[in-house]
Image (cartoon, rainbow, N blue to C red; front, side, top):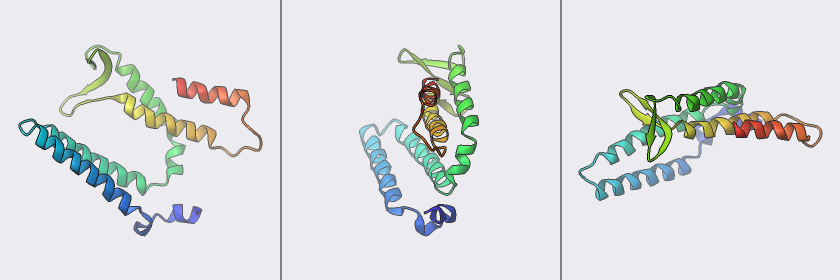
Length: 149
């Protein structure tokens, strides 16, 4: 199994799952276009699909163990983004929730969505170490602190 992870051949990629996901997004985009033809929401959906495809291929052909080595950097970056959200003028309040960052020229994004992934990476790095015994209370508490931040 380790050899299969290290090879990363196109033959090993799950093409069916990828095409089904792309088809689902394409169908959703078509439905958005039909529901509101005068609005540009469907164009934003296509841009999101393109960004998602690039991210999917990048992640699929990257060894996840290398990503886990830099998980603390991603985690800290995510925490910084969450602090930036609280700064008036940068953090936007939408629907009564201050959880968005305005990026000039690109629009806005919600850092909490990014932080979900970084938190999972950090927890995987912390709990993924080889252990001889069961987790101690201290180790579980540290995992809880990672999750709580």
